[in-house]
Length: 302
Image (cartoon, rainbow, N blue to C red):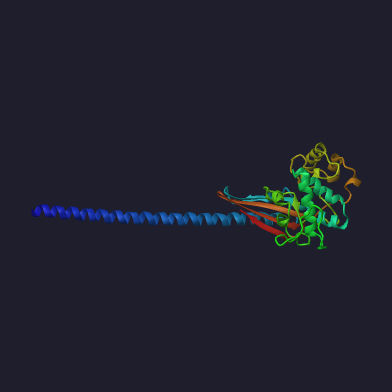
């Protein structure tokens, strides 16, 4: 009997030891997983900071006054998994909404407004929607006279036009009729408020295909020929192999008098710099004046 009790006590002690070992193992595993999770989070946070820093570095390089559009320094980094790539374009190639509105308010029936009307048509906006969007825009930025344009909605408790020129392009989202247009992806890729268009106009050196097609008399064939000539042999706008814009303009086939007041040159540039660290990517966008490292506007994207 005594031997049996000793055997039972030893068995119980062994079970307690195994149970204690199990608990200790579980605690060690939990601690290890917690440490690993914290290290992973910390590593990801570091990747985010590195990607943002690289994107900012690319933007700073692009804003250097003497940098060329195709300079090798616009692409760089540290090793294979920490890189930045910056791209410079001209802001004047975009359609400036305030430029259009200001000209139409000053001189109704302006050619600038017809460019916007054609642009919206190219983007797939039907006639009735275009009339609503344009009249609502002009009521929004125009002076408060107590009246509103034919196709524009009246002011109400829930709708308050600012009666000033737009301060941010996102303000278009508040204007009646623009809701569907501004909900599309990259809806503002051809629009701006930041180009110095007065007294100039659209900078043909940077204008997109849709903006060029919005010019009076422009045709698809001619615009495609112009774009092919403008970008030079490398197919990239703004590089050293590009021909003079006047030479490429011949391919557009539009008489200069037809473009009077609609085209010009612009010193405002936009840089889009993408930084990458591992699998984390961050983008920095900056609008600045050529030769001036002080930005007009900048923002980050994730």
